[in-house]
Figure (cartoon, rainbow, N blue to C red):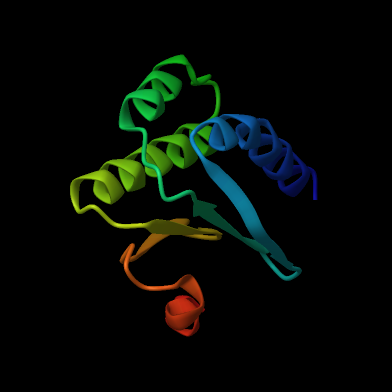
Length: 120
């Protein structure tokens, strides 16, 4: 339980940085079990400012592997979003063994509700 509390604290510490990068939390789901799992879904704005994201990564604390991975994944998604001229990016972060990050992008010409069923 103490490890899970530490994990949620690290995620909480990363949220202000992610918000500065243009992300918002859409869901945070916790599954109790052995081991417990959590899923964090982040949604980015349609305006990928890659220079700002790079600057935030450079200033981000490097004291936690979780925070570093979360911030660098968010910056990578911003770069992909900018390069491919996509409208909205979703990051699904599964905190489990092993952890993983899924990135999904919606074309800026499509409305998010049309493709939301594909993101679940």
